[in-house]
Length: 176
Length: 326
Image (cartoon, chains in turn blue, brown):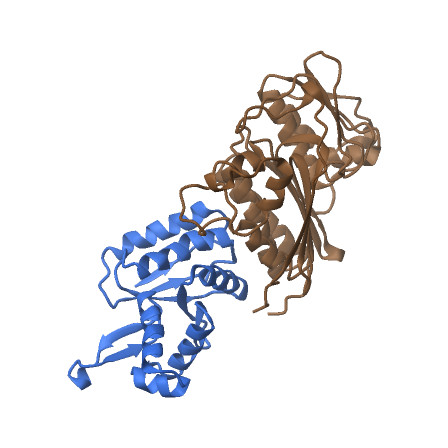
């Protein structure tokens, strides 16, 4: 599913609210595990307030399971829009996957989540034990990080059919 | 991405404003009663930025006079504030007059910036003779005339014009940065001011200096009244404390949001401003604050009381753009 932001300039909180409500209306038809691409290709600039009202509240609602358990990937952000989104989500302790066309990274979160996501993005698809060794963290620590990324919609988690569903496999959300 | 500044210096000078008896303009908290006789002296250069802005009592004839006869140079905030306050006075039924600058250049600039047009539209009388040399001169496209912002359509038009102007005269990255900064000021003016006549804005670009100055003004409830709507701000007793606190992260007059969620508008503005070089001057009530943001330096806020007491909130943001580092 793709949601395109068509405004060139986003200024007020009300602009962000309008977008969030429009996206939430479309998410009613979404199924858990769906990937939702939010495209900012036409956006030149967005204020922190509009970002917070749009993405900040959207991802907070996602983490609280107030909206369907979909994954989000942001695309089309210019460096300045990416800066605002990163700033806003960092303050909210939320995070989102950003596909810049040159790879996928994390906006928001903290240094630990960013490092985790960076390693995860190199794999694309992985199981937790693969990453724990790379990051030199305990499985419990890693699971906590992965749980945060999944609950915020920045990472997809599915039962691994190759292991009879006894473990989870993780994937970076990619646009269609 | 650039690393945002991590410290903020703040000085609050608690000089008390001397109220001018019956010409004081703040009434009950959350409302603005307008005086029935006063003279706002728009003297010299950028008078609304000056801590020496003078508002004096006039003859007891039920008028408000904006006296620009000795005005030498006006910045965008001068124009926006004059339009907002005069329009508000006129809307309240006060006989409101604007005395034109004697200086030809100052008079011509005010006309070019459509100040007269807005004043006349608001029912303000224009005093003084317009000489041929003072007529509206068309100039190169480096300014945004005084714009009344009463709703989303006006706002959209203003930000679009400003973006286009900065993009054309300075650059695209600078236009984006400018939008983020002025957007936060406009949010405050439109959403929090509660002004019956809306807000006014104007801008001037200096392309060779890669600089823009934007003035945004309303004659609404002012910062103190807005912040005190939130019970957590009940300790804010005066305009100096209010204006000093307004630029702090997490301070908000909004009451329908979880704690910590709001109050980041100025923080967002200063994050971008500190990547370049900016000075924000604000006035509200009897207080004036100057916030300076420079790359790799702590943001510095200086707030002090003034003798002049003004309605609503006025803001001047002057930014000199640096080449983006990202």
